[in-house]
Length: 318
Ligand code: COA
Ligand code: ZN
Image 1 (tube, rainbow, N blue to C red):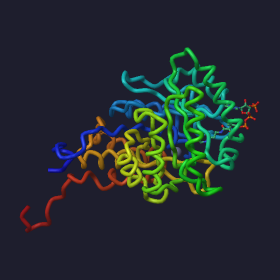
Image 2: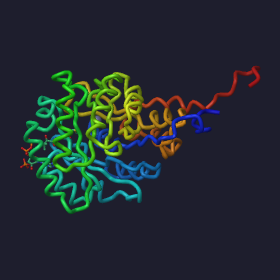
Image 3: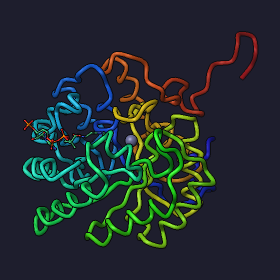
Image 4: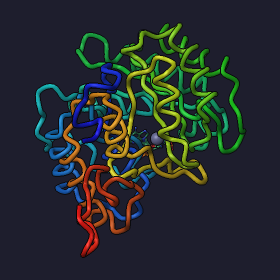
């Protein structure tokens, strides 16, 4: 029997997985996924038990045509009680569109790296921060939650390593603006576990544990190792994408997020609860190649769960 089935020998502190495939996963797909298919995917993800689903982004449709149907997606999904539907926004215009579409949470994004911020958002970091202040003012009193992401927090594909002081300085600026939730994002999978442990420990001196999310990409195969390092340093919340879809269209070499069902399988095998329906996630992930038109990187959906045993060869007793 696997540790996931006994659930008794592991660390009982839950690991909170936040699904980002509908946004980070689909933003980089070359073929447009029909609105009805996006809505069906989000509704099916809701049924597996997520507390947060990043459903779309309100960015320029010229920059990210794949998500040009953001408002329609939010209008058509079935909102499950207990799930927050998050929208990524780059600027005030995006925030106004997301508020009109009744997003539960706005995820404001800018980069630690000036070069990536200009490539991704067409803005200097100071201009992004000015925009964030306007978004906070526009959102005030409306009941919407605010999260802000530091992209390229563990390294930039143009500039390389980012000083931790720069990343933590942005975290302090976000908090001073009145933004509660903070995400540290490894946009192109440059982080290593030691670096992650150090930065998470320092971030947790500035941000309460329930407000901190880690967002890893598996570009160099270290995604789940980085999760365990972040957890050992105290982090509890992680973004992940079904099937390991994902990537930033404005970061050279970007590839998928850590894979939701691989992360959930690891957690359950270790006796760490997630509250998510792993079988449901695997079934959904197996439908992704037909949706996006190519194989996806997730491994558990291909290999099966560790406990999915095979019949012994003929003539050999089980
Ligand atoms: N949603 C929709 N349209 C927007 C918009 C938004 N959030 N922000 C700006 N626009 C429109 C403007 O109205 C303007 O339209 P017009 O040409 O019809 O008048 C046009 O886009 C250009 O506006 P401008 O302010 O000059 O923006 P820009 O061209 O410098 O682009 C961003 C800035 C931030 C909108 C763009 O770079 C962007 O959407 N980036 C997001 C990239 C992304 O999603 N990356 C992955 C996730 S991290
Ligand atoms: Zn990402």
